[in-house]
Length: 174
Length: 174
DNA sequence: ACCTGAACACCGTTCAAGT
DNA sequence: ACCTGAACACCGTTCAAGT
Image (tube, rainbow over all chains, first blue to last red; front, side, top):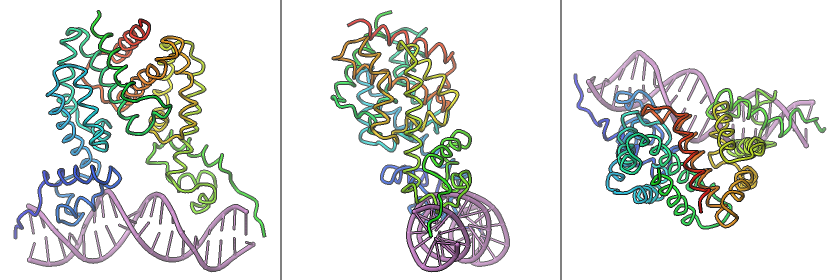
């Protein structure tokens, strides 16, 4: 006799997102997710292949969040600062979003705003390479900042702005 | 009655480094390390606080490797290409070395070559900010390249060289 | 002093049995 | 159809007992 569903894939991914932000990736266990959606761990396997797949779906959801935020930016410096504010406010989410676990489609969508602004700055021909430069720098800087890897003193805000100035100058001049 | 040691901290860290490169961070278990040094897992706790501490020691060893390699470079472009070659040859080692798990001292030592070349390029005043720009970009680019995050087509070598040209230009002009 | 077997808590995952 | 209890393999870690 059929039984009505007691949860859904969306609730599971949403629960995973919440647990990630409070307990980190290590706390994102099948048991924790199951408990939060009100089900026993084995039931999750009806909706999700395994933990890796679930983490990937959460990463996709985070990439969509990033896309939405970046779409509000109208210049590369604004975009970088928007990204930084979000990363500082959501460190665990940031690190999963940029861990390479999101799907190609999700990453493409999140890259679109950067690509658009880069095309406007350097032209279509160099847009992709410029977007990779900006993305790599920004992801690298924020990852290291959040990991506490910048420990040689100095002002981090200053270092961020220094880089932003030099980068925009480097991309503005052909 | 005293028993002669059957292993040492150095062997344990070396075993960890080897296992990392073949099986990745997930394969770097206390059991795998113990087996490789010829001891049972509980014995490791005589030399190492816990798995996290062991991973940190391996990260320190990797930072020292990075330092040695980067010290052979005599310009920023050469340094970046040296780093990239090493990262491609040692992907797991690279990602642990830049994960923020190494100690402050190890990170400072690994940063020294970059800082030195940046000081020669932009002067002492901006050396730290410039080093952070180069380091963040390079770490970000290689992390994303190794994670397969650059999937929008185009030539990755070209994107790397494009960034390197623009960055050196941006740092050369005051 | 160092090593080990036994034990515990915790995790991911499978599957037969329930409704 | 979906859910669960029981079970298994695997991991980190502790500790009393061995030498």
